[in-house]
Length: 55
Image (cartoon, rainbow, N blue to C red):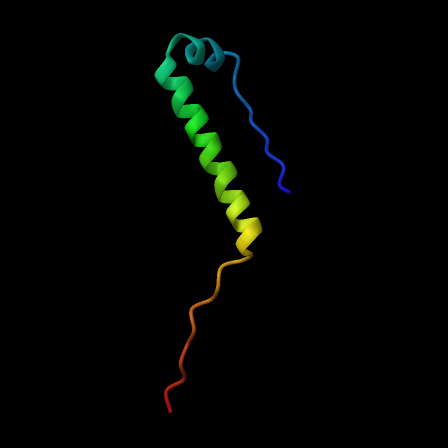
């Protein structure tokens, strides 16, 4: 399981609470990062492209 860290400045918090679209975008970004990390954990490292030697 992965750990997630989120750091917000004190100035960003009121803006997130005043603008619902900004809060929605933040939640969307966080969820996308969590889903990507879970997929990497589930699928493992990406496969390397196969190189076919030319004879």
